[in-house]
Amino acid sequence: MSPVEAAAPWPIPRTAYDIAPPCAAAIHMSPPHHKPGQASPPHPGQRPFVPRRDEKSERSGREGTAEGRPEGVRAAPIPCRKEVLLMTVPEKISADYTLRPSELAKVLALLVEARQPAMVWGPPGAAKSQIAQQVAAATNRQYVDVRALLLDPVDLRGIPWRDGADRTRWAPPAFLPPSDDLRRWLINLEELPSAVAMVQAALYQLVLERQVGEYELPEGASLIACGNRETDRGVVHRMPTPLASRFVHLEIRVDAEDWLNWGAANGIAPEVLFFITYEPDLLHRFDPQSSERAFPCPRTWEFVSNIVKHRNGLDPSAERALFRGTVGEAAAVEFSAFLKVWRELPHPRAVLNDPENADIPKNASALMALCGSLYRLATDVTIGPIVTFAQRLRREVGESLVGACVRRDSALQRSPAFIRWAAARTQ
Image 1 (cartoon, rainbow, N blue to C red):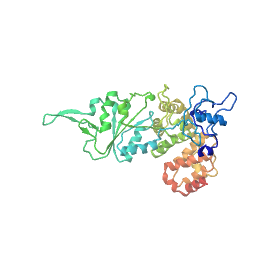
Image 2 (image 1 turned 135 degrees about the horizontal axis):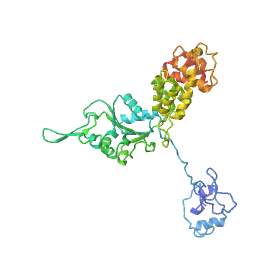
Image 3 (image 1 turned 90 degrees about the vertical axis):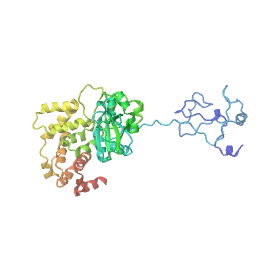
Image 4 (image 1 turned 30 degrees about the horizontal axis):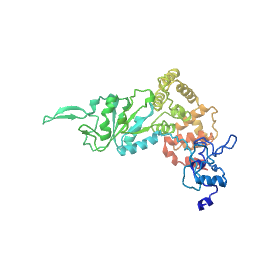
């Protein structure tokens, strides 16, 4: 017996048949001596099954005889190993590769700086175009919106003309920047999947080689594209494989927190912001199979914000009709009920004057509306009473109120009231 065999905690298998069977998660089979009623093969993490053998069976195994093995099974010599390894099946890996708007902006800026064409996919109204414009501004680039679905295949090359040597030249289209322009550009091929196949094919050279015929993109130009997915029931044509292989493909995911941060900085009505704060699922609810014309999405909630700001005493029934035609019936009903409570609340100045004793509405919608009114009045002077009132609320409600005020004016983070409030939350 070799030193390895002597040190082994159990007999060393010498044939493929003698190895313990794989775990049941990989292949369901019984060990050689398994009979009905006996224990099943080991599970991962348990000691492997190795049948006990007497001296005769061990000697017959070394001699390569068929004794102790079923008929028809041939011995297959294998290297001696101290341990028997079990086959396992790796767990299924699942991941969400969609990107929040804030994440998408960072990734897109990286690709733009690297002059790597990118294709942004997403549902209707998810702010794909706005993010492209934000990336152009963040990278100090001139933004060019090229509507691919409005082009004919020959539009990209331009119009032919005859030069002084009686040779044909091509005048490139005006929507593409001049080749010798030293500025930085971001060219967005908007609604690219909606363009017909011939237009998409005409873009092969421009996307990959940065030129069309004699025209070349300037050194400081980058290309991206945006469009809806095939499952969104829009006017979408399948992207040809050669064109798809020229892009890095990204997909946007609507995120309520990102949208609330954007809305606070871009003048979205407080009523809309606080409604979405407590009903984040209604920010985007898109069903491609629905026959309803309107649905809630970041784009349509911005429309609702404009309506709220300019309602000017509009009749409530007419207002509900406007909301229904903007975000759909279900979202319109809930938002209208929220507005009714919002507008019937006492003036928030009463809370600011006596935050320690002011009544706290028991109705959730009323409390949400009151917080929205306080948010609108948040300044470096009023943030102290607002924080005092927020400390009397449920933790999540108070954090939402103070967080909304800070999103609206980041300078409030330096106020003593906010610093004390934040310190108390970390203890």
